[in-house]
Image (cartoon, rainbow, N blue to C red):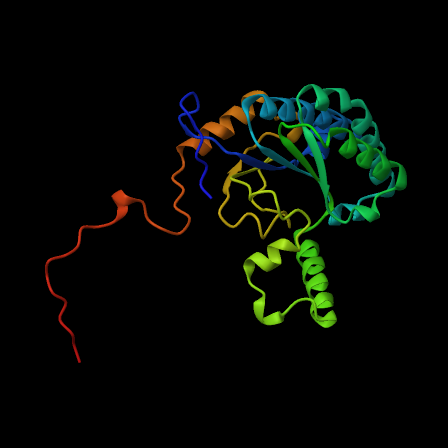
Length: 260
């Protein structure tokens, strides 16, 4: 589970999988007296820079929380713009993805996306499928509780059909029914805009991820902010519920008396 790659330039371990809750686009625009859509547009620049930098540095997987299940509740005009922006981004960024060897994969209830946006996603996934560099995952129409509910529903259907023995179900069984069971869990989760919550994002997968919250809104989160998060990660001690050797006290030579 613990990352094995050491980066002396960062001061320690290197996160092989980074997940980012990209928050603050609307706030960024409002603070500047502009409509919220300008924040989303500027946020695309951050997506491009962060993705390119992660690929360059050797990050194996990058997961971006792009659109949640709850985001469908936003005003229709904003949702329509976001879906159009997604479609345009997918087509414009193909050259950059190919140049950096990035593979695209999308997770979530994708059937809720407009047909044109979904087509653009699928086309880009197919185009980049043979790349051998970083995996870029976009969480779209995604909610972690929905992911787990979908997984349990599929297991229940197979149990009813007799192809899954309920007595055999364990943690690894459930993992196999998640949207993307093959990608290792995130090492580092970054949340922008200073909010101290995970917002229904990868709840199963974040069990031992290191959390990093920055006050920067997503449109202002660029290379320098990414490096700051990585350096903070490198300074953390990850024990996954256990103890490191130096934390284990020496065995006591005194006997323990039983009391009644």
